[in-house]
Image 1 (tube, rainbow, N blue to C red):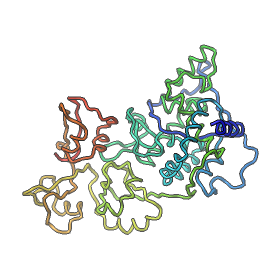
Image 2: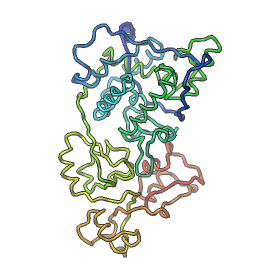
Image 3: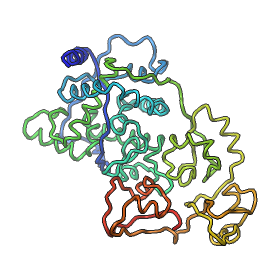
Image 4: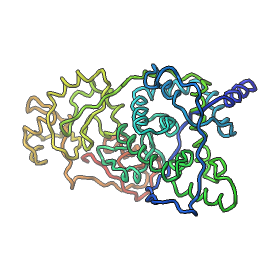
Length: 428
């Protein structure tokens, strides 16, 4: 332990920062930015930047490894604050942690880094998904924050993200990254260029940080981030990011290499699409978590994220995909007495449409098989929780997964209240 502490102390005396697990956000809708800062407005301190005298011979964009690309651009100064050191020690005591992180981040990090560089934002922001969710695109918090960047419904709506039973933009890499960087850019301006305050406000809300700054000013205290009276989670949030960057910058632990080349690409969809070969394209589910009911690619932005090596194969496959109406859909289990004509008439479709949507080559259907059908507005089912109910029991009753039941109703816990109403988007 003494040897480890000496190693940390030595590293801190030299340069910069990095790393940490998840946190939940209490995001509020951004306030209008004042055109001018009045003399009475809280003043904030800009985090010091590292003065890198010797520029690397290789440009960051030409590095072989994305972690190296980030390392070369770290600008936040190192910190020896006890909270930062404690978090560094946590990482060092979990040597396999970064292996898990690199595995999850592998298809995502190049895209995130590129988007941050395009905007001229600090490269350290690329590590915020590590702090927020350990790079889990489907993470969900008890504050109803969701996705890689843990955006709340309020912030998501403010920045134009789509959330419906079929698609949640907060869980989409492209949509959520855009919204998160828009929000962080706003907070940076709101806090007059102080990134530590902006990052803290991303976690706890700008109002809390502004009040903490104002209170310190009134008391004649420092407005440095570490001097502010903030919620416990937020007091540790920025140190987690600093610890992570310091680990990376000082090479205190290995970050398994991620190729500094595009791992994914985006292809457009003609409209609502249902993949008829889920087994063939199952790997897409992990990259397109915004689609809540994969392989039904409905209600979203009519695009798909693909591994770069799958583009040609996808183009050949997509030529035979049918065009579908852009509306909500459901899974229908065939019952005794059903026929394609009876089912089609019930849902306002022609038999040929029904066959096209479901890739059927004949009129023969079997009891127990499932079809994809449009959800009619009056068929949205509202279930009232009764005594003895549980998410597992309700999910089993309606033949859905517990995770989907949670997602549709924005539930992050497993406790239900009698009388609570849940929305079910499958036919009863």
